[in-house]
Image (cartoon, rainbow, N blue to C red):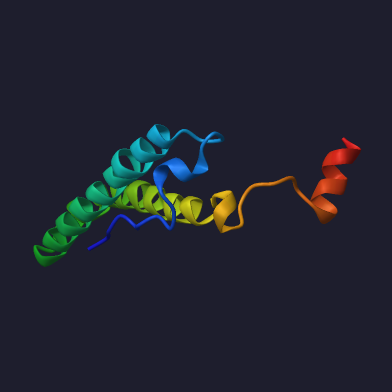
Length: 103
């Protein structure tokens, strides 16, 4: 069973850059929908495999790819965000800053 990962920061900790309400909706509703649908498709896949239902197995592949990809991408997304109190924010430095400044 797949689960919605806990965030390492509160929804409001990224304000004013990202609204706490947007973070809450994006995490608790949007990402959670991917998790819920991935779990449902995974359960249906197990049933189809048990019945040797090849058509059912093939039909479930898209739902598993879509919802599994959404879950994985969002799980990575949350890890790439951090409030200033946890080392996030600030202007880019190093090579990235140089490339941005050159544009």
